[in-house]
Length: 89
Image (tube, rainbow, N blue to C red):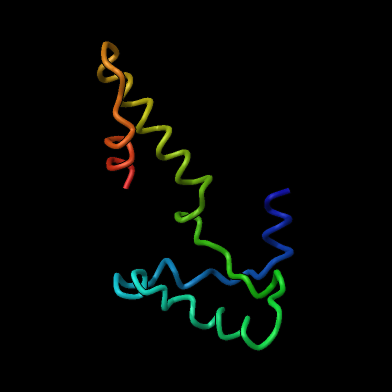
């Protein structure tokens, strides 16, 4: 179902993955989408996809892997979620 939703939408990938630090901080990578939305209501095909590395499903898998690894390394103490997130980056 998820793949079908992607195929129904726009197949271009957002420029977010290529945005520099300044662009990310100011959200200027969104300007083309905001400009289009100011002219007319946006359609699903107007919304670019996230790159696979930026999708929640991918990041969940990475975080879960790091979490399980931290639990296995020190079974006597609970792992730190903050540490698992930092190691996932």
